[in-house]
Amino acid sequence: MKIRTLLVCAGVLSLMIARGQSDPLPRFNVDDDGLWVDGYDPVAYLLDRRAVKGDAHFSHTYQGATFHFVDQAHKDRFVKDPQAYLPAYGGWCAYAMGARNEKVTVDPETFKIKDGRVFLFYNRFFTNTLTDWNEDEGRLYPAAERNWAAFKHRP
Image (tube, rainbow, N blue to C red; front, side, top):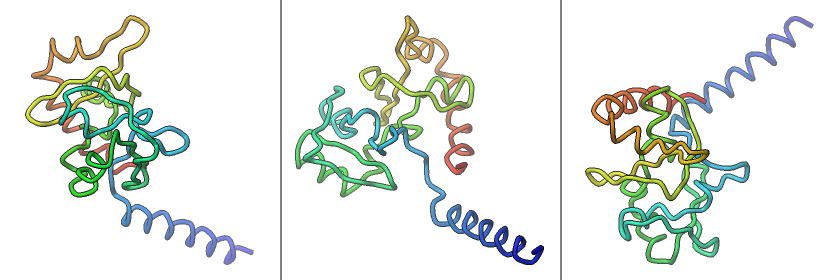
């Protein structure tokens, strides 16, 4: 009985280790169906400088997350170079990542582009974290970068 329990535990541990080694990637801000940030097009932030909801007809799954795009051209750009279009911190709130080291959902229409990167923010219930970010970006940005570097490899 003890040997069987040990074998089961070893098997589970092996799967956890293997999963960790094969998927040490950022955890994206997705819903229960794996849809990234309410279906907004990540390419539109940089190319169109606006938040645009994508179309399910132009979808692509990348690292387990499903992304929607407004058209085939946006999808093709993303497929060619996903890292160029992914918002910071997997699409989680930049302010929360910097201030509290937490993954917090966002309002996809509240964003900032800086140095070619898109940052998304929580904006609900009279709280717009983009305003707070802008007031203390010098401190929050490096903290968010440090926090995400450690966070993105955690399950």
